[in-house]
Each structure stands twice: as C-alpha cells, then as structure tokens.
Image 1 (tube, helix red, strand yellow):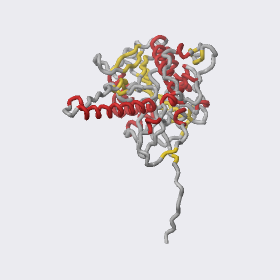
Image 2 (cartoon, rainbow, N blue to C red):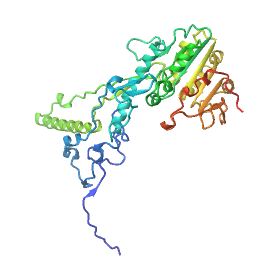
Image 3 (tube, rainbow, N blue to C red):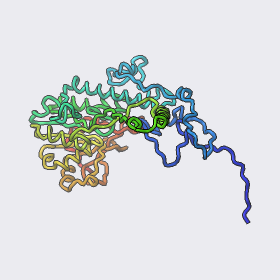
Image 4 (spheres, rainbow, N blue to C red):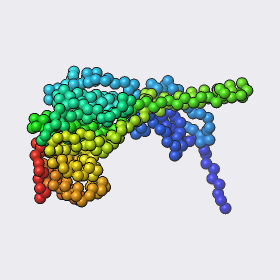
Length: 423
C-alpha cells in the first residue's frame, strides 16, 4: 500500500539571467561583437539575488523590471581615447610605456570589478599601439607601406605589407619577417610585451634595423590582416498590415501587438548589449583571407620576384606554420631562393600539414626552431618530429605567465646560420 506524503509547497527559487528572466535549459542567447557570457561575469547587474517564482508563471517578467534602477549598475560607456596622449600614456626613451603624470607602467585593472570594461580599454589601447608601430616602421625604419592585393579595385577590401626600398632589387640578401597569430599586426611580435615591457622586446624593429645595417633588404608580412569589418546592414521588415484588406480594428490590434513586441525586444537589447555596440560583419581580403594565403600571396608577388640570391625567414609561432604551408605549396621555388629559416616557438607540424619527405629533409638542413625550455640558451632539445633541430630559448618575462618567447631573446643567434647540429 502506497503511503501518500503531503509536502508543503511554497514559491521556488530559480536562476535568473541579467534581466531577471529564467533561461530554459538548451536556450542560447547570442551576444554582440566583443561580448560573451564569460566576459559579463562579475557585472553588477549579473549578481541580482534569486527571486521567488512559480514554474507555471506565464506572464512576461521583463515588463516587471525597473530598467532605470538596473541601468545604474551598468558599466561605464565604452568610450575610449583614440590617442596615446588621450590615455595619458607615452613611450619613454627606453621604449617603455609609462603614464605621463605618474611614470607608472600600464594598469589593466583601471576599474575594480569591471573586467569586461577593462578588457575593452586594453583592446582600445592595443589598436592605438598597432598604429603607432606602423608609424615607426615608416618613419624610423624607412619602410614603404605596400597595398595588397596589388590589383585591388578602389572599392574592395585591402591589406598591406612593409618593404625596404631595396627589398626587390638587393642582389644579395633579403630578410622576411612573419609574426604569430592573434591581435598582433605587421611589425609586432607580442602586444603584451610592448605594453608591459618595451618596444624592443615586443616589436620587430630591432630585427629590421639590424638587417638593414648588415645589408639585407627587408619585407614585413601582415598575416593577421585578413578582413575588414563593416557594420551589418539593418533589415527593415515592412508590416504586413500596411497592404492588408483587414478591417481597421483588426489592423490596430496587430499594430499594437507589434509595437509592444518591439518595445520588449528593445528593452531586452539594452541588457544584452548595454553599450549599443554595433553588429559587425567581416569582408575578407582577396587571396589574403588567412595567414597561409597571405604568405603564399606575398611570395608569389614579391619575394619570388626579388633579385636576392639568398632569402632568410624569421617566423614566430603560427608564422612557422604559415612558412611550412608555403613550402608545401611552392617547394621547388622556396628551395631555390631560401637559404635559412629561423623559427621561434613555431607551432608547425609536418605530420598534420602532410609535409613530404623532401621537405622534411630540407628543413633539417636549413631550419632551426628555438623553443621555450628551462635548459641553457641554445642547448639542443629533443623532438619527436623529424623536421628541424630544436634548441632552447629561455622564456623571457616570467612575470607574464611565460609569455610567448619573443624572437628578441636571441637576437644575435638568429642572425647566424647554419643552426647548431643536434647532439
């Protein structure tokens, strides 16, 4: 015999999202560009206490929220300066980024408990630094900015690279620099090192100047500039009631429902996208839509056309993968022009990239990969991949969570080939 047990039922507690409404399992809310649920953690309005609710409750909870009260807890506007001076920072004579009033290094946590806002501020500063490095490449290094594709129309998306005056005419030596993946652009190795350490650690400028002093022509690739972003056009949906033969009273009811729906949607949008960040779309650059495509394009249109008998590559991180892909696609041409390749923490993989035996043999003779290691600098490091020698590079700047090694760590070593023989 079944014993019935009476249980007192009261209002249940349930999880709430940013606007106080329960999100059923399996539902996903899209976010605006630059935001994510992880980035919103810690946001003041995300810490609303659970409220009593009934599982059968069907009324629109959004309409019960005091918008003005909640908006007081929102983050400050994402309105940042567009110059270093506006941020009150400048690079000193040592190439270090310092506050112009206090002399202190850059502070990421400018506002407590607002990680998303601090991150956006950091990104805005990073964009300014990218432009600053571009200026240094042209003014301090005397490089030319070359637009690509070379036959681009006025209206299509474009990228660019940098070249020395003699890059295509130098009969002896040409050096090609390829950075890694992420937010870095032409002339940079690592943005974090530029901001937290100095320009010499985080940029390619020391390499460029040294190469030019030693008689090299120079080409600086820009493999992460694969697309431009434009605002996504808004789709205007015309109300069906405009051309309907429905009675006026019925059209009025439909229009009222439509207006209420739009009001609720706009109401929610203020929380989903409180800063009204624009919805963006990407327009890819022809024949330069990825780092691999970019490397092949620059090879075909510039490096292969150069007069240099000896071409040298310095490729960092994903730049090493891009070089191996170039080798796979243009093996005979690369072998005929490239003398040596210096890789730093390269992420290439000859198995996954299906590099053939002849390529692996060439890499063993002509490439060297300096990798993060606790061993003394330039010590041979064992590898399971049968491609090129690996030697140690003591990770620089341990305080940055073992930030990727910057090729500047072994500046003098990368200018001397052939690489050391493995022991």
